[in-house]
Length: 182
Image (cartoon, helix red, strand yellow):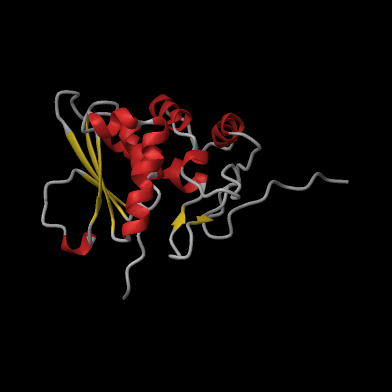
């Protein structure tokens, strides 16, 4: 009898990396080839998704987690890992002396914004923008659990704001986790 193949994401086809703990989730993302650069691995290892998921959710399941009644979600771990690797690939050859500005549009619970700030590791700033006030407030509380220094030193700023009206310009990279009406 042939072994059952590992489950795949029905949207992108990536192998799912579900686990029972943060450490095991990180190991599975690496084993499945979704995390491979040292910088992205270190950033992901530093940010426990459990700090950003509501009570009762399974934070180490490789699927999206719904955030309350707003319909917003924390993206699946494999989606965040893939985005981290794409950013790492884009910034790896940039001079360390060149500060980077990254926008996380639709920052929800703050998970991806925190991952991005950890990936930059002092090389720039991340602005997380969320238009739902309750989520923006929860994001600050979530980041403050294990990463308050990111907020205190300005590596990460979280705002409640409509990203479509964002007046600031000059971002080097934009991660969009938001859904916008057509």
